[in-house]
Amino acid sequence: MNRPHPPKPPEELLNRAKEFGASTNRPPASLFLLDDNIPFHATRLVLLIALAGTPGIEGRTKLAKLDFFVRYPDYLLKAAEIEGKRDIVEDIKEIIQSGPTIESHMIRYRYGPWDQKYYLVLAYLSGKRLITVQQKGNVDCFLLTEKGGQLAESLIEQSEFHVLSERCRIVKKLFGNNRGSDIKTFIYRHFPEVVRLPQRQIIPATKS
Image 1 (cartoon, rainbow, N blue to C red):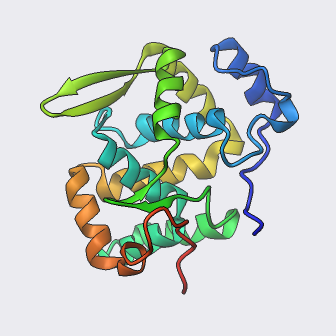
Image 2 (cartoon, one colour):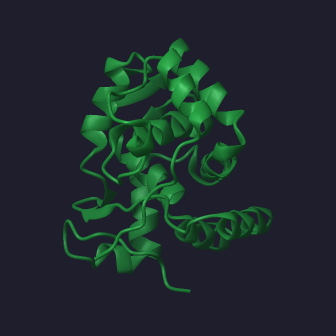
Image 3 (tube, helix red, strand yellow):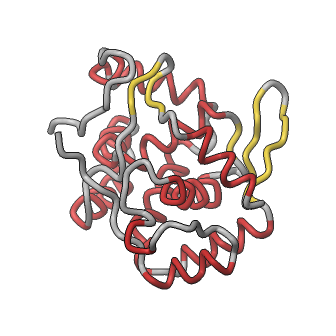
């Protein structure tokens, strides 16, 4: 089965990534090409933490559920419609028309949408000193370091990341102040087609 690939990164990003120490030894042409590529997912999580954090994101559950809506704008649209956010609905429709429907796939796991690469991606970001993980109660809180904040600012300024940045901003408007468990409950209540999937099965795009 063919799976959609994330977009090839602009040359400016590759150069800027080297400045911030976020580059790899892989050839530039393939750096963000494969769906399992860690720097690609790391870039998205940097933007997510920067734009959807309050500040930072508390817990892996919340991180994964916010990321789900960033990666699946069709579900983001449905969530906005359920919440009666008409202004946000129109913004999401424009986003869906401007690019690929799915940023990259996730799987259905025990607690809903999940990506087994999170552990590697978070370790990568921590190793590059782009994020710090602080204990807050019983959960980990993911925060950008000064270096991570600088990278986020540089990405936000680039037109190639405008759509992704807007998705993150909209996700914050809808769910930024919610706990991870509340967002999980929302997904279970309103998107049973996701919950009914066998564990570890790829979550497809929603049907209109």
